[in-house]
Every structure is written in C-alpha cells, then in structure tokens.
Length: 172
Image (tube, rainbow, N blue to C red; front, side):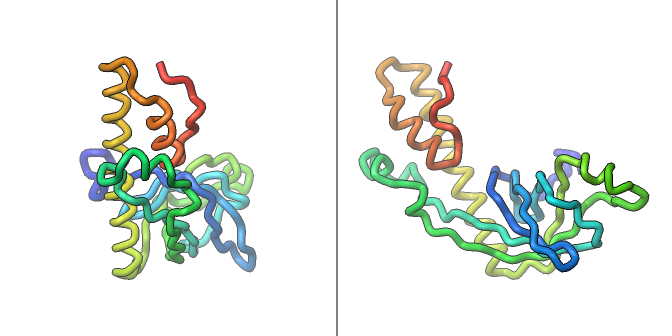
C-alpha cells in the first residue's frame, strides 16, 4: 500500500510483544502501530499461518502540552498506565514458497488487525492520537532549542525519554 493510500495514522510503538506460533509463545518487536495494524520485527520464528494472535502493550500517555514543566519533570515512564490488548493479525504478504531460511532473513512484517474489538480500537486510537500530539510537542521543543539559546535541554531530553527515545543522543 502506498503512502497516498494509507487509511490510518501510524505512530512508533517500539516495544516487545508476544505472539503464538503453533504451540509456542514467542517474542517479537513491534515497531509501529495504527488503527489498521502493526509492523513487527525480530521474530523468533516467522509464523506461516494465515493469522495469529499478538499481545501488545499500549502505554496510555498523558498529553504533555497540557502539563506544567514541573509535572513533566516529575513523571517517570513507569508511572503511565499500560493496557495490554490481545488481537488476531494477518500478515499482509504471502510466505508461500519461501524456505525457512528465507523467512528468517525477513526483518519486518506488516500485519493487519482482524476482528478488532471496539474497545481495543479505542485504546489504539487514543495511543496514536496522544503519541502524535506529544511528538508535535517534542518537535516544538526542538524548534525552540534551535531558535533560542538557553532553552531547557534537560526538559527536552526528559520529554524524549518519556516517549521512548534515547535521551543521551547528541542534539545538533
């Protein structure tokens, strides 16, 4: 699907997930999420089923633009509520004819949600919307840091860390 045809806004999730494969429960990484599906990577084994279940932890972020600087500085990521959803997904590409070796070499697999409940859809929508607003807030901090000397870099790094980014990276 081209970007022009994308139906849903996607945002980073970058977390460990579990999925079922035959009689096993294995770990993978979820790189991003939208209301339509997820991008998964780092599979223990690539499921060759038409669909499989994934358990996704969704952090319920506060909207940072509505909080004071002091409040944000006092928050730790572990304080955010986490909702775990279990959802059936369908890989959007076919693995027919691929050897087990070829499947291991796959780095990312896009998966579409199947039968997503309205409650889980609301949790995903809330995550995507709030994360997007917080990303805009963080980008505004970067813009201000470039425009004004003396902008609080410690605050900028704190917001980045809360959103799951490495707060020790050099800021140009």
